[in-house]
Length: 245
Image 1 (cartoon, one colour):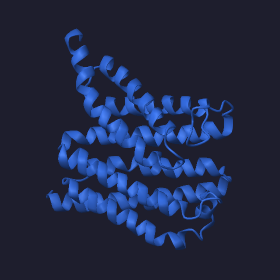
Image 2 (image 1 turned 180 degrees about the vertical axis):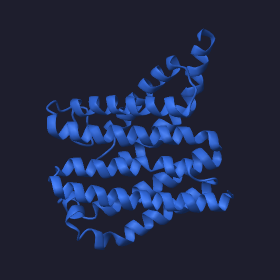
Image 3 (image 1 turned 120 degrees about the vertical axis):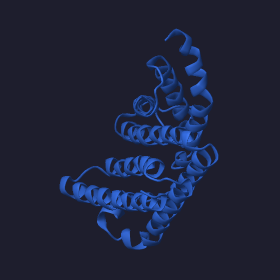
Image 4 (image 1 turned 135 degrees about the vertical axis):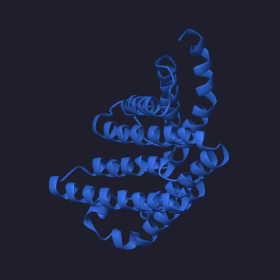
């Protein structure tokens, strides 16, 4: 298959992924009257999970950038219509007008930046670090939001930017750790003794980035923080354990 054909197929997969999952989430949320925060975080996971299609279903990084741009710009332009759908109106915070459109732009920016830097500049091997950054944000922030709002009781005095809780942060560390560890297991041949401490370190870094980020802007702080640290620390942890395994 030529690069052009592969990239065209990748575009169909990305648009199909969003169309099918968004429709399924809307339908299930209406059928089962799912809580607002769970619906929001399900869309959040859908978005972060699409990074694997953008990174691994295209032959050329710039094709992935073009498709991501087309996808999110289309969503932005359609949002005035989509917000009239109860399922979309339902997940918007009442006190934040234009929140969904702002989130679309922030996600678009970070997707384009991460793909361009970690694939376009660093080459195909750099895709791994972008994937690690996005799964840390996707899984970690989703569980942190749900746990923090439903079970969070211990407010942190040092959380200057948003009302975050210890319970939510611990949930983010746990979810980020498992997401990162699984991604490293699937996409690398690192020893478990390198994967474990690396995943722990990156999970704590994700939580720290989220802690000092105001509401909603962890979209642009967590993925690059984790990806940069992954790029720097992966050879370090691998080098430390390599002589012993």
